[in-house]
Length: 200
Image (cartoon, rainbow, N blue to C red; front, side, top):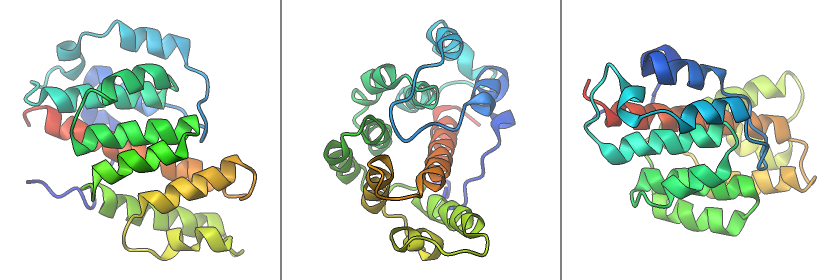
């Protein structure tokens, strides 16, 4: 098994179809956002096997999880949900949990994170969150409810759900930091899915 604890993110490794789509994905809001019609039209017309070319799909569920992630990256939560809820694996549950977190159903998000368990991207995500929190600090002070991001060695998805909820409700000024961490989370999870979907 490959170790994703220090998983890097390089869109150029995702082939000529997925690579540009992933590279151009916006910094999503913590909430639902509005689907990008041009990108979602491209995604909707894309045959799965063609999207992974020249790689060969060896894990169909991981390939579908990549598409669920891309729908989410382009703010089409409904289409992402349709796919992720049919993938009964920790990774499918992870995309499902992010989708519910973004739609504001925080309790349901936590339910799906319980089904994720300890995902193999958590180590890399904790490391990325530490770096982002320290950059965000910039000589000032982090809010008490965000300090764990800068000092933790383990990723706590439930605590992050609570932080996103506080930012959405106006009880925290860490919205941008949360959006950046969320972006990194989606990038790492997409890379994990892609590398397990195809034969390398």
